[in-house]
Length: 167
Image (cartoon, rainbow, N blue to C red; front, top):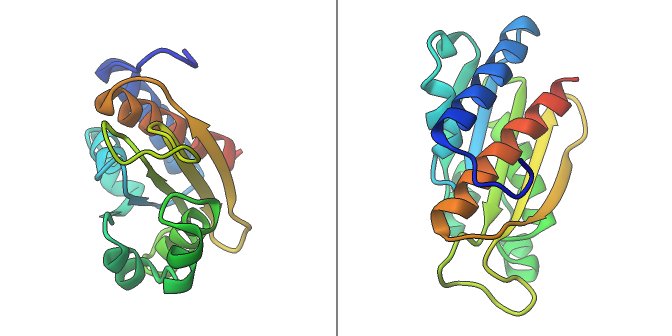
């Protein structure tokens, strides 16, 4: 389903599988979300028993929220912008610092319909994953579709990446 827009059922299945991996590994998850506005946290907490493996989620749209809640450096945002590898790595690291979780996912992107540019068109999304004590891994995605489609694909990619991060 790489180019397909994930359905609610698809997202539920991915969240359930991710939750089982987190539970079995005795991990707690934190999310730091910009373009998805808490959608990752929503789909994982739709799973019964998620309180056993979900710590918290932060929806951080503004520069100020990214700085205050996650410790993203002002110069990172000024030089690279909110939608960048540098920012998403600081977001995922900050999520772990500011929570009791052992694994984190962070997302930042341009869901549209506006806000895109030649170098960062609508559908540009950075996602990062990190385990406490490990190194962050970030990946750039270019999703197609409308605002909801971009956001759904982002949630699915974030969950799939969590499964890889958990090994």
